[in-house]
Length: 495
Image (cartoon, helix red, strand yellow):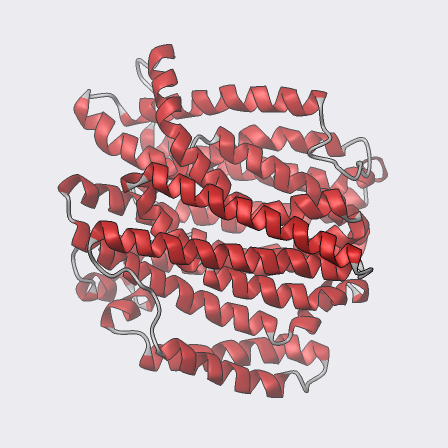
């Protein structure tokens, strides 16, 4: 529990930093390049990230298990085990990059904005390797590196570069893609620098084809779970790219990126949760795992719900940051924010299920993403049949995501509860009172001018929510998440 508290506190700070760094990219990208070009970029980047997750081979969570077991069983140096994963990732990455260079249509269903856009495919190996390096650091409970790479270097590099490339005429037509590429490689260099300082260079390492093939085989369920879990966040953008215009994708992507801010807070707890779970699994301490799932699950939904309310209530003002022509995506923003709050239980449950019920977890995930795809296509076709505009198609994609994530959370939580033989729920009644307080303050905030809604309304809504949650929802073990390290060490209950 000490590790969860320290890692959770670091990641909460990292989320705030990432929020500050990520917003400028959206604001500047839409203002400088327009919704059409951002829509083409959105269609490309979601496919690139899915391929990158495949190439990471589930090491975001699987590496913790390999380092816990392998280093003790055969005396293998931990750094060599990490290099095994990196080599396997590079092999997969090279294959996918070659495939997409030959057949780029899945990445660019609506065409490209310029000749430089194709280079975004080169982000696949860098993204995958960064995931592995950060997982290695998380095994040592070093979450600060994840914060530096993902919350500081990556978003700020992207925000600065998107402006710089706009003012270079020769690169302007691919400025958004090039900015993303620069940010991904900057994050890789940040992670690699700390990794080599922590683990040092490999010694006596050499490729072992038989071991690599066995490792890849064992990694498939983990990689599949990662890809499908992430795919539920991306398939809506992919399908909209095939069925609607780049402009519609651009509007939806802006709403999606705003809604993903609380989702990033949720996934930022995963690196520190994985090594804690693997160590308790080794000793068979299922009661401790259930307690940790409940604890982290409540932290996530409590913080995430407050952020969702603060962004959804003044939704028109938030969407207006990208320009007046994308304010029509406000309804989609609200639905997406609700969906992310609903999904919190699924993510925490999956953090355990990938170790104790890999095949069942994968089967559930496949069913959920199939449900989402079917609902998304069905609602898009229904909107088209009724002659509705593309805004309704985007809203249909958001509804499909909400239903799919709600189903995933319910089914996975029930399965985990049965396997651990202990409750794992993350809901507390105080969340209802806190939501009511936020809504009341929000009704006053939306009467203000838009600039005042953003500057004063959002902090006021969030403050009202957090005051109620802090007073009525957080117990002593929860409050150590926000206290100084010495206090956390004294207040946390050992697992």
